[in-house]
Amino acid sequence: MSADILQSIAESYVKLVLGVGQHDADYVDAYFGPKDLLDRAKAEKKPLSVLRVEALDLLKRLQSISREGWEEIEILRHLYLTKQISALVGRVEMLDGRKFSFDGEAAVLYDANPPTYPESHFQSLLGGLGAILPGAGNVSGRYDTFKGAYVIPKEKLDAVFQEAIRECRKRTSAHIALPPNENFTIEYVTNKSWSGYNWYKGSGFSLIQMNTDLPIYIDRAIDLAAHEGYPGHHVYNSLLESELFRKRGWIEFSVYALFSPQSLIAEGTANFGIEVAFPGGERVQYEERSLFLLAGMDPSTTELYYRVHALFLKLAYAGNEAARAYLNGTMTRAQAVEWLVTYALMSKERAEQRTRFFDTYRSYVINYNLGQDLVRGYIERRGGTSDKPARRWEEFKKLISSPRLPSGLAG
Image (tube, rainbow, N blue to C red; front, side, top):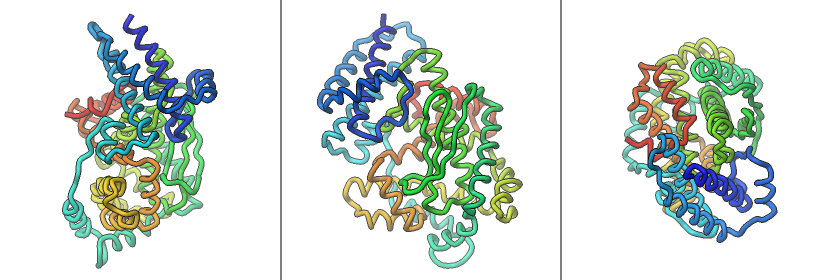
């Protein structure tokens, strides 16, 4: 009986997500469920106030269900629906004019509490990076000069990406049985606030778009191939569809609400998936003999490039601090751009692009770095450390094919 009630609530949740999507073009990131539900949502276009009341009613129904005797995955499903619907309420309230702080929004939408770092933290990291960068002058300028030699030529971009995808898929398929006929298409686009995007279409198919507005550096080949493709978003969405929607009939996994806890899991696993696919020094070894040569770069510099890159990645939370201050109104756009140039080592053009991302996606930025850290900690506590790659793959696969929540990853 409880399972029947849960299935009914799940279908109502899907209808609500599709309903919110009529007010927010970015909200429904993917849908491959029954067409009649989408047609009905478009025809009805319920007011935000009605959607909020219906969502709150679903939360009450969820709270009334006894989970006695349930298996773990059924409990996870119940918790997942509860948090996803709670986040939907928060997003509806935002669309209706409610203002959240950056941290309040992150908690409501993504079931997470992002850390705060002082300026001194990033200054210290810049000192370490400056110690290994060639040249003289400020770190930002030296970093730009250093990276300038590693821009993938446009005429070689597709060949480099196709090779990176081939390698990522080979490594992933050795550990994860991919759904039959899974595939994706790559498009190169412009005038976007993001660098890459996976549009999952269902039935194991994705459209992956790469933004070519700004120079694309050699590290982005593996990063985007793994993050958007294997074992990242493409695999994550394919497994949720095949394992939970198709096999179990859990209709809530036919829709992906972007501004929800699911996104922290999606982005966190996509970023951590890079380390899963290329443990230890395997990435440097592979790129030295393959991608650097394809891109026309000196392979003898691969190790130095990734030493610099590893230190650069530690600055990731600088972007969160810029977003927090900008969205809370304590930084102007110009000040946020300056901060990103100084502490996230972005070019001015890339920093301006990033503030446009803040405008649209707001606290979503936490899902990349905090998500990666939470996923890494969760998998490593379960034995999936870098020196045990098989166990790491095993735990990674379990995570991306189950309804886990961000708060469930915390130690």
